[in-house]
Each structure stands twice: as structure tokens, then as C-alpha cells.
Image (cartoon, rainbow, N blue to C red; front, side, top):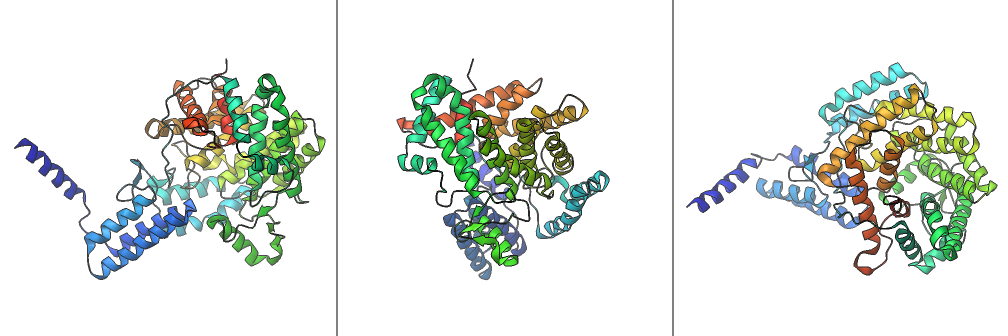
Length: 484
């Protein structure tokens, strides 16, 4: 009897949770959100599936079958990771911005960028406050959540990680040869070569210590990728970008917009002008910091000059409403200051942070808009603060950055409690830096670091099969987590 009662109770609760009636407007709003997330995945299969669900919903409304319409909308949401109803992902709230709200936010963009570039902190603060009012309880909420790593922490000796790193870069001999050749490989983004260099530079001391006979492989990759990046740098200092039209949805649309205004923007299959919305700061930062660090370690002045040329371009690049684009330039300018000792780069980094990064952080430690509050961009923004903490002298400015960095870190820890160690391309790198750069770092950070490091190692070696399962900088950084 009690068993049957329990079953009936569960059924009643499920029915009670159902919306009384889905409307066409509500279905349309939820489907638009699902489609936007599908496009973000750049996965044609997922996009096609959401479009099929959309057509099914349309037919369901045509025959007035609201139950089928609700089910199909939920299926569309599930296919992109949304929980039923589209309000949460993995049980955590996500931002839901309707078209009218987005229109209001878009109308503030010009004022925001004008205030940023005029260094008008009062107007900038007023625009941010207005944005917060429009967003309401969506301020500081990401529109996407991703399940993190839950791997069991399994300590690995640094030499063991170095050995695995060497196996990973040699698992595909043709790729190794191509990257070491000094020539662009297919549609590889410039930042891809930078990632290889950053990983190799991090692991290099361990390879030199434990596997000296393999050092030439590491240095060959560094030299080849640096030569490629220099070949991709344009005279003004930024870097060419492959023509991704028809190959990548978001990048393809970006290039389409640029070419519509400037037909000469493409040359020999490469975009040679900077993205007017600020995206070129990504490759400029990643490539130039790799060149500056490699030039310092391997004593190559050409690489340093190339890196400083990019820093000079970034120094004069206008601030944009996408906070993480500005953060990339902050990181590059900090590196340029460390390498050159020239104060102009530190001054520029601080100015870009003060007007182009810091104002966007809200009370929960994340950035105000739904895009920059995504975890992957949140970690990038945190990185820019770590770069400033390594570069700024002691004083009020450094203290303010450290305070903001702690708030950003606590937001990551809070999410990790429910989702696991954040799965990004620089989780290990930046959490480890935070623990070294700040005082009173939460103990939980050490636990998250060990989980993230274990996950990176396991993704590259699970089942006894070596693969490129994690970004090389993350795999290399894992070697430092259990280092004594």
C-alpha cells in the first residue's frame, strides 16, 4: 500500500512541476536559446538536431498538441546541456536574456566603449550600473555551465609528467614534424602555435633535468612554432587569422562581417586586418607572450622584437566592451614590461585593467555580462589579474587587484563545489599561480588543483593509450602540483 502511495506521490509531484500550458512565444524564446548554445558548440550534428526539434514544435502547435510541443522543447534544451525548463544547467542557475533585454544592453555598448577609451570612470560606472539594472538577477550569471572534473587525485612525480609530455608530442610524428617546420599548418589558429610553445617552455626544465637527450625535440617545437608565428605577424604587430568561412560558425561569421566592409581584408586565405570588435587581441597576446618568453629562455632577440612589436600594437588598441579581450592585452603588456623593463608597458597594462577589466566585475566575483561570466572567460580575466600581481609594485593598486582576484577565485571555488574542478585550458596554471601569489589562499584550492592535474594526466594516458587529451600548457603545469 505504501509503495503504491509513494509511486502516486511521485507522479503527482511530476505533474505539478509541469507548466500549465506552453505558449508559442515561450517556446520560441526557449528554442532560440537552445539554438544559440548549439551554434556555440560549432557541432553541425547538434545544430541540425535543434533545428529538427524546432520544426517538430512548429508542427505540434499546428495541431494544438501542447504536450508534444513542451516535450520537444525540452529535448532541444537537453541536447545542448540545459535542464528541463531551460532555467538551469547541471542544477545551477544560468542567465536567460530575452530579445528585448538584449536590445537594451546592446544600446549601451557604444557608451560603454566611449567611456572606457575616454578613461571616464564616472560615466563608466554609470553605464555598468545601468547594465546591472537591466540584467537584474542575471547580472554575473553565465549563460553556459559545464561539468567539471571529478577525477580522484593521484599524485604523479614531476619526472613522470615530463615523460608523458614527451610521449604526447611524439604520438603523431607527422604533426610533430609539421609544427617543427616553421610553416603554418592547415587552418591552425596562431594561438595554437603559442599554446605549444607555452607548454614546452613550462616542461623544458624537467626535460633538461631528467631526459636531456630529448631536449632537442622540445626546442625544435619551440623554434618551429616561433618561426611560424613570426611569419604570421603583420607589419602593424597583430597576427594573421585563417579564413574560417564555411569551416567555423562563429569565426566564419566574424570574417564575413569584416569582408563585407573591407573586401581586401583577406589575402591568400588569411585575414590580414584586425577584428574591429577586439578579437585580434587574443592571438596578439598568446603569440607575443610565447615569443617573449621563448626569446628570453632561448636567448633569441628576433623573437623578443616580434613580441614587443605586438605589445606596441596592443598598447594602442582601443578598449572594447568584451572585457576578456581587454584582459588579453593586459597580460601581454605585463609580459612586455617584465622582459623589457620599460615602464610604458606597465602603465598601459594598468590603464587597460583599470578601465577595461576591473569595472565589469560584480558582487558575486564574476563579470557582469552573460558571456564574460562563463567559466572559461572568467579564468582568462583572473589570469590578467595574476599578471598584474606579478608585475605591479607593492601599494594600493596591487592590493586592489589582489582583492578582486580573491573574489574571482572564490566564485570559481563555489562553482567547483557543485560541478567539480573547472575544465578550462588554464585551470591548473591559474589556480597554481593564485596559491603562490596571494596570502590566505583557501585550502580547497589545493584540492581542486590536485583533481584538475590528475584529470589532465588521465585524459592523456587513460587505458594505457597516449593521446593529446589536454592542452599542453595544462599538462605541463600538472608537473608542478606535487613538486616538492
